Length: 133
Ligand SMILES: Cc1cc2nc3c(=O)[nH]c(=O)nc-3n(C[C@H](O)[C@H](O)[C@H](O)COP(=O)(O)OP(=O)(O)OC[C@H]3O[C@@H](n4cnc5c(N)ncnc54)[C@H](O)[C@@H]3O)c2cc1C
Image (tube, rainbow, N blue to C red):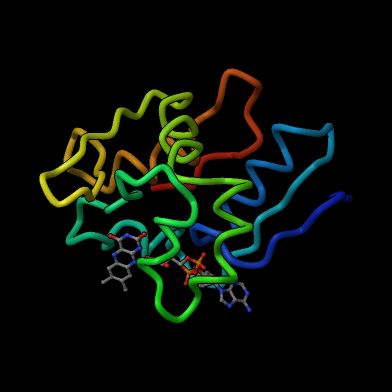
């Protein structure tokens, strides 16, 4: 079997990369994961609720929250910032809510919502075969 892109690691970064490639090209993508659990860290993140992003839509201001990467994150946040994250999840049917301290979570308060939407078929097709339970 031939794949145009092979992503090593079925975590948040691997899934996001694979989804982005699959949805913006006609390339075939394979994710290789060494464990039996996809998106394992996403499921435990934010105490099981997954703190998806922060209610801060200005790249420079957002980057100030990362003392060890402040300058290097300004560019990436211009290309894909908090508003893009909100839109990305919204386009997959996941609504985010903002807490008093600015943290944004899925309105279900469950990280299952964010991991499930990453393996679900999207309006542009189904790049993935969902994992077996
Ligand atoms: C307790 C906890 C709470 C957190 N809470 C939050 C939060 O609320 N909000 C937030 O934004 N972030 C949170 N984080 C951080 C977030 O979970 C991570 O930044 C994110 O999951 C990292 O994703 P990743 O894809 O880079 O790496 P990983 O999630 O580590 O994924 C890497 C994957 O690659 C696989 N792999 C490794 N080597 C190989 C190989 N040789 N072949 C095949 N597969 C391989 C691994 O098994 C793993 O599945 C939290 C982290 C922890 C531990």
